[in-house]
Amino acid sequence: MEENGYHARSFEDAFIAKNFEKIKNKKDDLGGLKNVQEIDDFDGGDYYALTERILDKKSDFAGSLLYAALVEGETWETPKYIMDGLEWIHKN
Image (cartoon, rainbow, N blue to C red; front, side, top):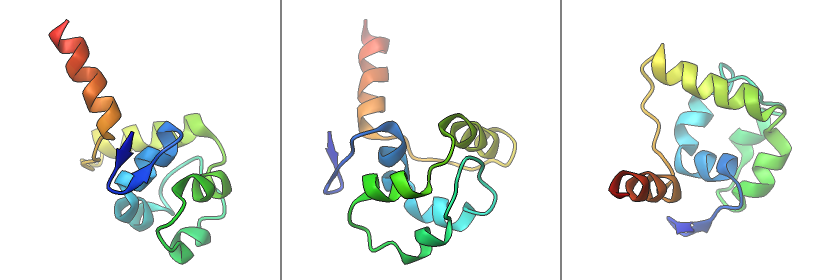
């Protein structure tokens, strides 16, 4: 699903695209990442290619996002396709 001019191919690149500035600011505190210096050089184009270069372990990344939300109070934006799915489930 296209959102903000970008069509994501995975949860991770959709999430990074939606929350890029927050990810950039927290890059040193989030788990599951590698090559974090590439985040600073990113031009805003292909989030999927960026995700391939910076993501080391999906489960560690997801866990650190959850930790940041629950313990640190970070407010992440949810990709639209996930919100649409949750709304569909809620209706049914």
